[in-house]
Image (cartoon, rainbow, N blue to C red; front, side, top):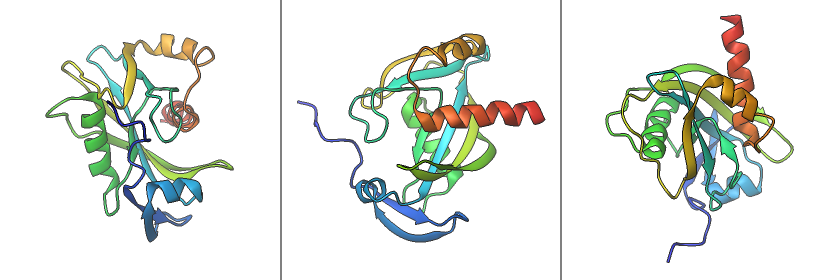
Length: 175
């Protein structure tokens, strides 16, 4: 039988201030329950044709269960760097060994009445087949960017990923 508890609730995370400086540590469960600011990575994965990896999160995810996302990634563990977390999370969630290091693009502070985290956005190319973790991903496909844009109003997206994608499009339009 699969464990019915949310994933990673006891994982220790760094708690950071408004300047992204570590000010303490706490279990993920406590970080979310008390809206403590922490760190996360967002990695946009493209196949060789430029299509974007899109997936629906499992119902067991602690935050934003069963919603769609155009990023892989996640929170940083205590003492972990953004680059290391982006590499680890992308490889784990995509199920790809030997994945190239994701390219860092920008950081932003994501804040809502319920959540707050520093967010580092990356991009990576995936040349081989993906084998997403069934604990993390219920469904996935590589979609052309124009189809992804059409789906933005049709599917329910994780709000932080939606905001990261909005900022990524803005970042690209200014480059």
